Length: 140
Image (cartoon, rainbow, N blue to C red; front, side, top):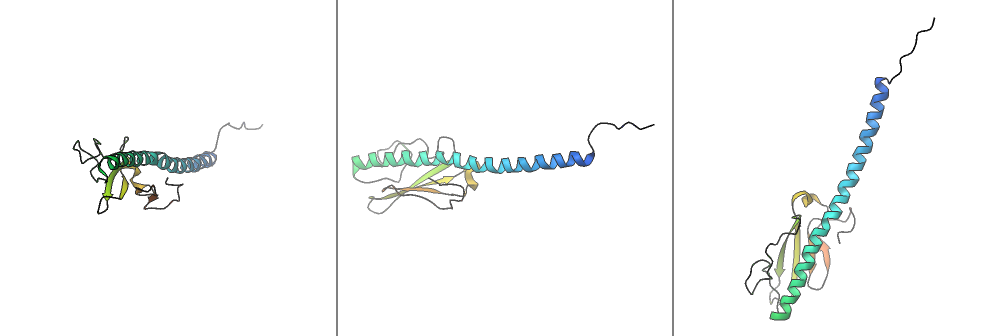
């Protein structure tokens, strides 16, 4: 008489399946986080380009640039905040002596702080740059 075999999985088979799922999940999370950094970078790019447009309007009226981004005075650009819409970047404007050139810098904040591009920059001549590396895609 033969003994009937119970159906089911052994512990080793189950552990192999769990290990495969864990490996796939870790690869998916890594790729998602890299994508999320690139997607959030647009927030800083939009902030810098809107400040640059305001700087050009200011230059048209006063024949110089200003380093004051926020405020309602005539010497400011009139932004209510130097932080991007979604809060991933904050900006500063550095105006050279004579107020004829500027460099805008967007510093990442919150979950974007560990982005490999680090600070995004934009100059009055339209030169775009970053202080980090571009191993996770183009920073601009």
